[in-house]
Length: 308
Image (cartoon, rainbow, N blue to C red; front, side, top):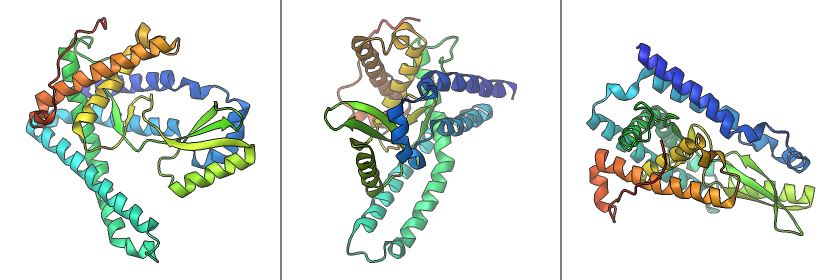
């Protein structure tokens, strides 16, 4: 029990450190253009601080409980598969719900979607229980692989491998009308409808005489890492490893100098991509071998000069 509590405290320390390190830019006083745009976006802005606290709470609880140690390997395998299948069902229901609300022939979408919304609520409730456990299993599995590759210190990944599956926020990009140049960008809530996005763009454009566009986000440099919902375990393990390599490099010169030049950014991204592919493939080969049959060509390890 003592060591599990100690593990939870360790995760807490790293979570706070990386949240401050990776999110330090949000603590700076925003420029005037940003503040002007925020007069339109404040009600729908994504709160990174709140998200980090919630994600940290989930990780601390899992770390303190030592969840992976209570399950045999075959049970871990089944729970991860169940979590991914559940995500697939939720995605299907959400798509059907969107079709109902966008179909002009449906006069009363709310009444027409009562049963579907009830089912979706039950599925999401089940997901809220199952997903943190499956995340803990995957963190442990990726950690064991990176340990065998010599990327740990004393058998422990530093920083700990932490990720949280969550809808990713949108990004509002604002540019001058007379020049294609991003003036500012603001993260928005992930549940904004297409109509809400278009209405926000119109208000910002008219109010500030600019050109704005709401776009999906490919990835976020947060800690714990934000990972989008998926049913593809190959993509998921690749992404977990890829983002952890970024965090790992943050403690080394290549990561510390990420913004120094385009060349260093390219080197950083290339390193994370190569290592992420290989680590993810090794996780599948060891823990989910039935999935490796469809992955061609097989992973070939490359000896990267990553250092200790």
